[in-house]
Amino acid sequence: MADLVALRDYVVARMRTPGDGRPPLTVNALFEALQQSFPAGSPVSRTTLYGWLRQSRPREPTPTLLECVPAFSTALGVSEYELYHIAKILPREIDTAASLLAAANDFRHALSMATGALANAGLSSDGVAIVVDRVMNYGLDFRITTWPIVRGYSKGIHLHSWIVLEPVEPIMSRRRGLLAVLASYDERGQREYIRYNVITETLWRSLGLRWRTEPGPEWPYGDFPGLCIEVPIVERNRLPVPEIDLVPRISPDRILVLSAPFGHAELVAALVGEGLGFGTIDLRYQGFPENSPSTVVARFCREKLTDEASRYALSIAEPSDTLKLLEDDIIAAAETHLIVGISYGPRTRTLGAEVWGLSQRELLKSAATISSLLHRINSRNALISIEYQEKDYISDSASSSKEQIDFNLLTDHARVSAAEVLNSIYEKRNGPSTDTWGISFDDLRHGLSSKARVPARGTRVRWCPPGEF
Image 1: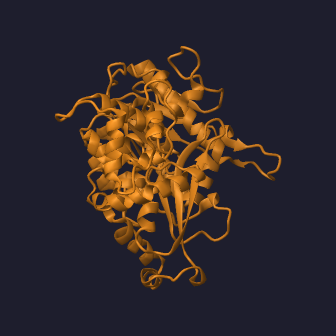
Image 2: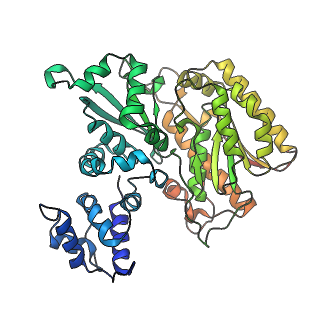
Image 3: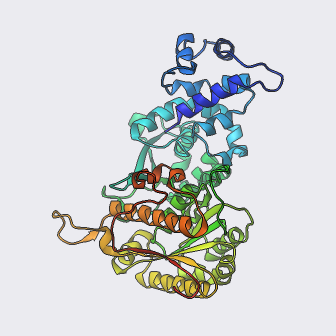
């Protein structure tokens, strides 16, 4: 959801600050700028604008505030992208994308419609609104359905969203020529056309999109749709937040989380990154071409592991063939990264094989490679070990004929594991206390305690000095 209050507060701060030769702006002057920018008149009344921007007891702004962004940009001398970023509509890393610059006008006009639709669906506007806008304005007669994937009982975590595209039946539409052309391709060809022509490669990679082609156990509605775009939310790639004096620096100031596929290393890395104010990198959302060979993924990992940018958390949760290519690189990275290793049991492996379309033998090989790497790393460096106890996230529902893994409990479990990692960093590396960790951990804060208070469970998260893994 767009953060309208943050946008309003930023506009107020800019109004009071002189810049580029202009004096501070009054609300009246800003309203006149709105009048001049819109031929049909300001999208909000003078009274409404005064209500939003007044100093004492300001009124809660509505999504109409977003329609004012172009005029605010001109009047305040700040780019539209900066304002959209403040409102949490655009991640900062796509500000310079050429394809987005070309689509700016279309995006602005469609933003109000997309934001309203997504608000009703309970979705974050990051990425989702942009993809919906591109499809809507390309001339394709698609029915667009958005599915928010939110998990967790104690705290709902919006992991990602699915955008399902379905051609509209001829009786409902004229079926414009573009859709007729697209219908001549097979599903793979349609996915490539939408990626490269409709959304564009630059935007696809900037937003970290990927095609979802396998439903796994998450899809209870029969046949899985052929065109389903997965948009990362909490796991999307992020830049580090600006450093402030109140947050202590840790050393090393990069985190690397390792696990076999389905260890939820990506989620743990994203949440630890949030708690530390670090940037995050998720390999699943790099826009790799479909069925990319392991050498392509390994090359990307190698570049990121040797990157000197500080304050980042990343994860590697790959099959064994990719891990084998990266063994020496991961060992070398342990000198500049705090390593976090995750292990899990047989039921998790069975479910993970189903979700990722891999054999259980493959997941066993991957886990063995991770274990070997952790032992080698711990011979010289301290690390954090997370040993999942499956009973922590096994459902005991009476309606089920057998015990099974509960996805919501598993998400709760990964979040608590991330909190315990942050506790360890606070104790051992002078990391930040809970008051700066972010909203994903607010239910684990208690009083003035500097560490999270986690529920009793079987899973162990432990700091391993050299030689103790």
